[in-house]
Length: 356
Ligand code: PMV
Image (tube, rainbow, N blue to C red; front, side, top):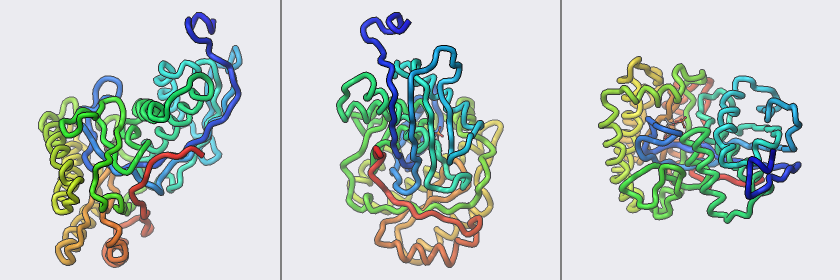
């Protein structure tokens, strides 16, 4: 049976262990709309984060003959049946690319460094850490692979779990999708951007927790609704243009134009939600109160702070590290009252995933 599956290469049956941590990321140009097997309708680019990450460990062994399942999953030490479908789908998708998967059983354990149900999207860190563990397993069982190919394939696999996860393998900034701005950009995996002004390597992302509840509309459904959104075509054109403009901004350290593009992207993403059918709103009243406070603070102090949003109500405040103290005071004085249980997380731009 094993020989029939793989004419040229026998799959070795092995016991082993792999463990990786991978961070979340925050998109500057937003990916919203996909086709085929998790291919983005427009290019996107993100800051890789540091503190908000998922740590995943996988113990594996040969699969027993009559065993139906091929994995078990513990999150923070407990069973999480609600995650099983997503993991199952992911493992099925990547098993074409990692033949050994079909012949092994995987005990998966994950935990996040950020509070679960804080409304922070965890699919990027979760799926990228899983993809890296499976790549490590592939390396242990089957192949010699160069470091570069390992990273590329991990990003490729992560994409099959969650599109944005493809941008979490490396840092500090990663782009993904066809874009005129970057010749080497790929639809299939993320590529790190090296040519950036040093100020961007100091960027802080303070995440204000405005709503902890699970999203009313999943991003899977949100992407799907772009297929019939009457503004979708123009949105994809706009994202491409913003990618082109952001390229220069990132090289030059042009913070004024950075702010313009980043806030426009955040609001355009949410405009797509509001103009889909059925329409939906993921922002909360407090999201808007905070946005107004940011406008006011920036006008008053000339500090180059801006906001961005994920597919949710929480606000990400982006600013260079040299303004850390002033921004922390602003948060305490003006916006903490809008956060659930006064909760926020100070994160910053980081270098990507790590084997542990
Ligand atoms: O990775 P997904 O399918 O959950 O999509 C996430 C999309 C956004 O977070 C809203 C934007 C992005 O580019 O990360």
